Image 1 (tube, rainbow, N blue to C red):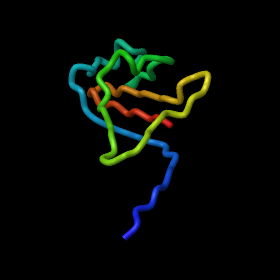
Image 2: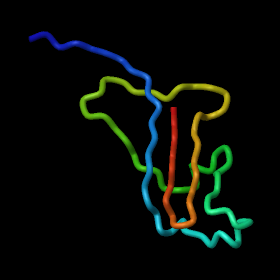
Image 3: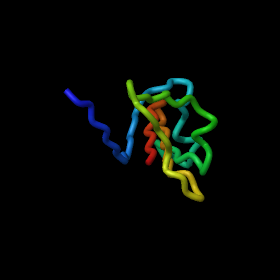
Amino acid sequence: MAMQDFSLSMYLRQQWNDSRLAFDPQRNNNSSKLKLGDEGWKRIWVPDVFFCNEKTASFHHVTTPNRLVFIHDNGRVWYVTK
């Protein structure tokens, strides 16, 4: 059986809980979530996602990173990357 190669582009959404990031909404203008700035994702722990048996992998290169991070008051993190 011949092996075949393929490629794909994906929009990856991840969610996890990190109790170290929980906060009091009253100290955040009564908002229950924070949006991290441009490179805020570099200051928190982010899971290292990988695909077994991949040949190559890369991120979409643009002038501004395509990442979005929201942190909820209970420590739930919502992370999106393209």
